[in-house]
Length: 263
DNA sequence: AACAGGGGCAACCGCAGTTCT
DNA sequence: CAGAACTGCGGTTGCCCCTGT
Image 1 (cartoon, rainbow, N blue to C red):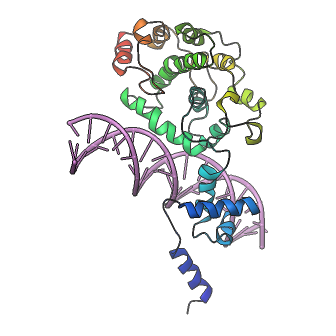
Image 2: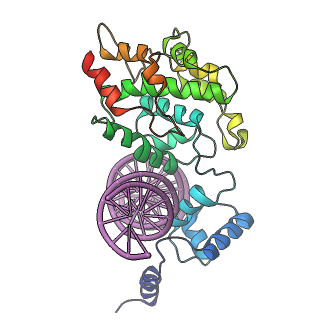
Image 3: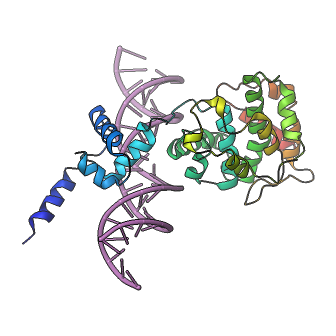
């Protein structure tokens, strides 16, 4: 004979809601956290009267309801940081998210899977391959730097991109992670505005110089690697004419392939 | 105008690490 | 000290919306 409590527990489990959150549920969760604070998610779910698992409540709060959470419109600065940090740490989304104030690991993960992996697919190379990493470092990142420079009124143009790619690595032995750590990327220390990014364009220029990166990062190309020519390709008029609207069409797949085949 | 396919995003799942009892 | 419960993370899935045909 099953106890009343176990029956109740199984019934309760059966009544657990799944799927998209309703406005009413959001309000209940926000109100409860406003009064009682967050944490102890299973207890919270029960006390708030939400027919959700604690995990679901936590996820909803962290990824959506939290007041300082930012969604959409990932800026060039943020894209640059994601590319750089991912080249160092791989799929350590939560760690990467620590350096993008207001961004969640889930959003960064989605950005990587939808945007970055899409480009890798277009280029017919693996997103984790050295080839794609080189493309990121010597084409994508300089272009983002250029866009950041233009956006901040810092005298853009192709020169800045080329300069970024060719800047001596004066700070390359000072990982971005440590530099960012100095900037204390804690939520309370960072506002949601892009203008208060934890890294400046100048520091990014230094950080993203083509130097070896410890821990499986990108290596300085040696000899006649095609990536060296890719670096120079930033100055090509054809490259400058490529369309770069808001992170899409960052390059022409055909152009990159033809460049690659040349070397 | 209707339909199909793909992209983007929110949410779920399983696992590992940590904390509590 | 051991087991249970909780928390956090990364991978995956499913749904909605947009775009192209």
